[in-house]
Length: 213
Image (tube, rainbow, N blue to C red; front, side, top):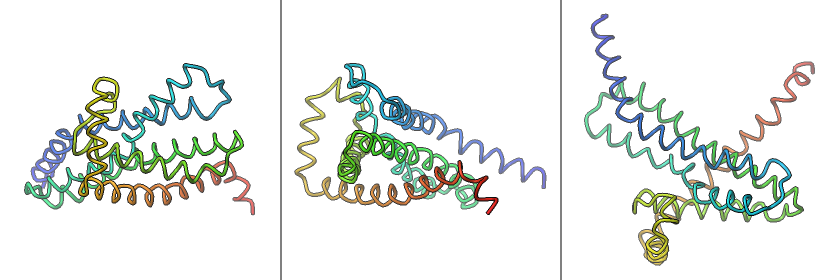
């Protein structure tokens, strides 16, 4: 029994270890827009040159947060490679679920913060449009990252290639279809997670008062 448990533990650790490097990397990229959104949108700051540079960086790295949803292809690849269904169910799925939840929540909180910023500046009417535009922008960024293998910094290092490729893909039927599907997935996922996030944000500071009812 002990030998069997030890064998499966080693297999599980090996399975996680081979994915750990890119998981940490993608999580780090997803945390960048979250951190920047706190600096840009949560406090009253003058829109200086530094602020605009921060906003530009924020937009460049924004798609990295929902990009983690596409990493489900690694689970599919593991299943196809013959990895035990128990390892997939008990190790890979929980690990990937946590990894994806962190990335998606980084995205959701960032967009919520931007919406709150717009409301403070007297433009609540722009929030829904901003959210949809953000989802569309990220859908394009995710496609360019997953299929064309562009990185966020390629906008600075290879601007001509990024612009030309983006325009070409936007006018091609198959890439455009993938972007539309991605847009739909992001929109639904964001809406659901936004409700949960706002509910938790409201409940947490009021939990003591509610417990006395």
